[in-house]
Image (cartoon, rainbow, N blue to C red):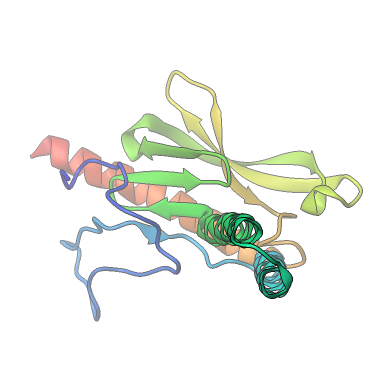
Length: 199
């Protein structure tokens, strides 16, 4: 992968990381994707629920398999069990992996249903906007704030950093830190691109 290409090269990062340990100077360039924030307690509760469902399905499957008579019934129960456990595990991984990832060259927004990758040079602004949002998708609608990226010649892109989502509900400091971190990466990424063009 070209170091200036913001497209993902492989997989997902579970937690923030950087390529180099120890002090850094102004010449350091972050090529690998860095997760902008860790999963909040709301998301961990949701994934814990997924893990519990997986365990219950596995236990039920084992019970049905031991009581079933005949190879056909055993094969059907086994296939359904594997499908259910695999689907739940994949969903759990996706829930934990959904986040905002950044490098010195771009940003990657990974959600449950989509993925969007942008170069910092394509982002004209990063701003916070007021919205009406429903926490967890279940609670009553309330005033909230979310971060959007303004794309040159295009629509605003939701960064999926929302003050009342599962990662930040009841944690305003964590929301502010994530929003400020995205703004800083955007400013530094643009500055880095301008420095490269001037060389």
